[in-house]
Amino acid sequence: MIPPRVEYAAPDSVAEAVSVLAEAGEDAKVLAGGQSLLPVLRLRMAYPSVLVDLGRIDGLRGVRDEGASIVVGGMTRHSDVIDDPLVRRHAALLAAATATVADPQVRHRGTFGGALAHADPAGDLPAVAVALDAEMVAEGPGGRRTIPASEFFLDYLQTALDPGEILCEVRIPKLDDGWSAHYEKFSRTAQAWAVVGVAAAVRRSNGTIAEARVGLTNMSTTPVRARGVEAALTGKPADAATVAEAAMHAGEGANPPSDLGGQADYRSHLATVLTRRALSRAAHIG
Ligand SMILES: Cc1cc2nc3c(=O)[nH]c(=O)nc-3n(C[C@H](O)[C@H](O)[C@H](O)COP(=O)(O)OP(=O)(O)OC[C@H]3O[C@@H](n4cnc5c(N)ncnc54)[C@H](O)[C@@H]3O)c2cc1C
Image (cartoon, rainbow, N blue to C red):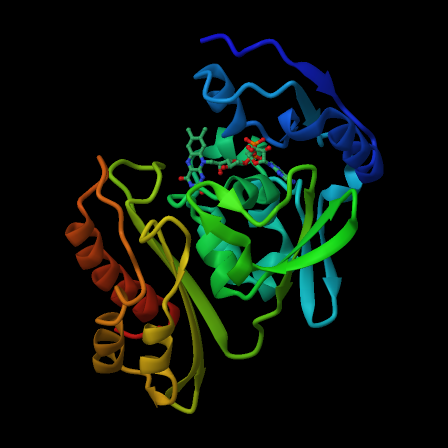
């Protein structure tokens, strides 16, 4: 299918991109890897007047160390996130989840910022951002601001980004000593979107689970932080019984959709099973 006619701009800096977006008004769209946006245009589900391609802005790419956090540029491709030594060391959950995104072609074009800004409930990375207490750094006509991941995802395909704002980078607090992580994803075919996914990170200490972070994919219109699961784990023995009991809380606060991927009750069942698996793998149990 052929996308609608659209003007194209490829600025060299964030400042220039913000100014092109401001000039074009609410009809303008940011283009990152194009893996979600181009299908939307081809299906004629959106009619932007201008596409502002961020691909030439080198400063939006890469990962840097900022002491207690790592900072991932919005235009960092999935394949670069997976291979990055800082991500692998300090945010292993992000590397694990990103490795399950689609296929190598999509991972070589799609970007971390694009996946978060698109806010697809079936996308794997929003649940990771929420579980890791990431912070989104956005720039627009009013300057820079930071939005906690817990306040970023508003509804189906909707975020707290204002029109004209660019998601420049994502700050992720390091999870280092004693932490380990696993992303468990159930999909109907290999390399497909998640019917349900579970992002789990656990810190073991002296045979107990000292801390846990759990985020759920596709269990609502936005990613779900499974606080009930986390509370049921904290301070408990790191064993199969603890994990099984905690996983029973996975559906709390969720509002799973019914669609071609599965009915809501099936998703609730999957969330329990996958949470148990994700925690067992993350905590090296069984
Ligand atoms: C066949 C296929 C399978 C896929 N499977 C999966 C999967 O299993 N799991 C998964 O998580 N994802 C999957 N995806 C989506 C993939 O992760 C995309 O890369 C991602 O959703 C969008 O990233 P992008 O860089 O391509 O963004 P684009 O498509 O360029 O943009 C997406 C949206 O975000 C906005 N946007 C992009 N970047 C920014 C920014 N920096 N600031 C502000 N707004 C921005 C755009 O304006 C647009 O509205 C799949 C995609 C395809 C084509």
